[in-house]
Image (cartoon, rainbow, N blue to C red; front, side, top):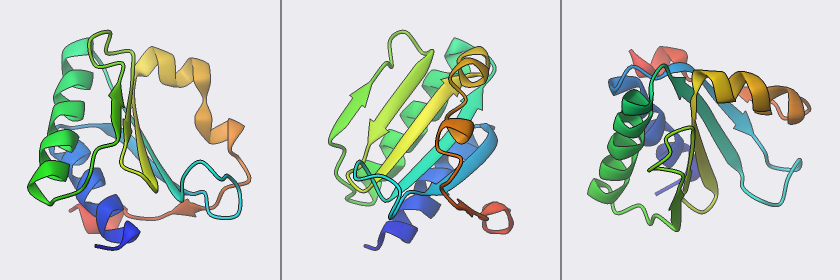
Length: 117
């Protein structure tokens, strides 16, 4: 399965749980950590957990290896490490505070909005 397929599957999973402002950053050539970051947020701890659970479930259904899932219990910033794709699921307040889009501002954005419909 390609990285772009993983991005689409996990972004769709987040969208299915009404994640807001789903942003995909192409990290290739920008960071050695991963090839893609998916960044989104929920408006409550329960919604953050629901998004993370859906991302995890869809990854497992599609035989995508989950290397690490951190922050689920606190539900302020859940990091789901899928190898070359890392999903950052924030609580709205934490997303504003950490502002990863600005931190990684030199990474190109990938437009996936039309594929989520």
